[in-house]
Length: 417
Image 1 (cartoon, helix red, strand yellow):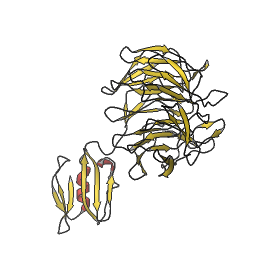
Image 2: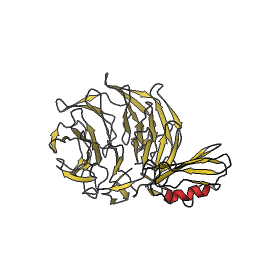
Image 3: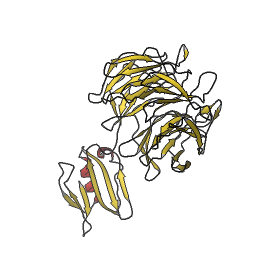
Image 4: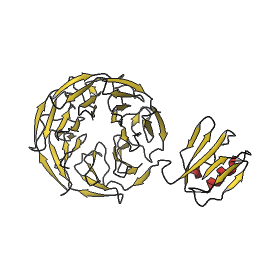
């Protein structure tokens, strides 16, 4: 439905996308708005003013108390369908509640979830089918593990590394074959570690860096060779760190940011060169932070959001420019959060979900626009959750799974954005 201001200061409401709609001519803008309220398929309204535009990101049926009454409005367009607003819908539940697990998108488009914790350590794994919205169990990992990593290899296998269980910290690794639905043990890392990072390099090897155990935060790094199933040591980082992030840049270098080194949360960042196997320091972030997120943007920059420094939670965000090796602050999120997720959407926006802060666990979500450097709140998740996973599906939806909604309360629910 489109509304335009006529020469005689009447509004013409024309039947276009929201059907069925009776075209009317009225001098009262509210008549057009009220007519829209009856159209359940009308999703969002954009009011064009002489000075600015205003878009209502909500179902029209929910806008009865929020409809615009502005004599400066010159036109209005109603969008049908589900493009506005992006909303959350519940999908099939996991068979087991879990947090601190992994989620990997397989070559066939399904999502593999494995391991985690729900009062006990888990070795179970299950598959999400985006077509049916259902989960099916698949073979268990060889051992239970929590706070581990998962990496998709060039051959389509999933490499799971490290973590912890009731036996301690793990150096073991195993491979999931989606074609057979089975796990195979592969070579052990040289160091048992959790809260590390794992990055699949352009040459097909996997770089594992940092992490911790009960005694130490590691600066060591090692490479997995899928052809041989073995690990070799590579250059060590300049700083031992866990709770950090690792991002593969367009130039194939790996950017590691922040994390904790003992009781100190660091603001340093460093780059791994896959050709030389060495690390070099690059510009430091404005604040030390761990449990944050790092997302590669379409322009090649890296967006870091939120986190925690042992005393405070952050809503701040900053951008790393690989061309200059420097950081610049960008717009802050609406609230502080750590142990959240960040997903780069097909439209280039970054969706941040959930997490926790000093006020508790969060169900809020917000979108970062790289073009403007600003954040916009979007619909809340149905359930508060932290230490969950978020996976961008082939159909461009984002699947959020599991997590914890409060201390000791674990989730088997999943939802789609």
